[in-house]
Image (tube, rainbow, N blue to C red):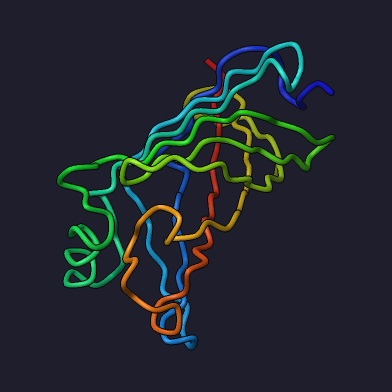
Length: 175
């Protein structure tokens, strides 16, 4: 099935995109974080099988509205960002139709690589008057296990959920 985009390369518009996550604390409260430093590109081929998505996220750019929490998450028990400063995603399979797509790929964090699937919906297209290029919007979400990546393995899931929801709201710009 062909993708709903023309063949070519599309870059993430970092100014108009957000990549974040949600974890549940004490089974009570969703706590959110955003990453300010990321880059990515979608290379569209003749079909979904010939297409690839690559994203790199700078873990040191985490913003969670609490400086102490941000510092704690950079430590060895969580991201261990001194040794592993980036998280990466590279698609291995893209499938779907029209505006709904499933993107499966290798997510690497803390030196561990696991296959994850992100459900993606195209939200629209618009000509951006400042660069005179068509911007294409997507929202996406998926769930990953923090334990599978060695993130805070000694913290029980009743304190911090094992399931982490990853959320993206992005614009792509054709090159």
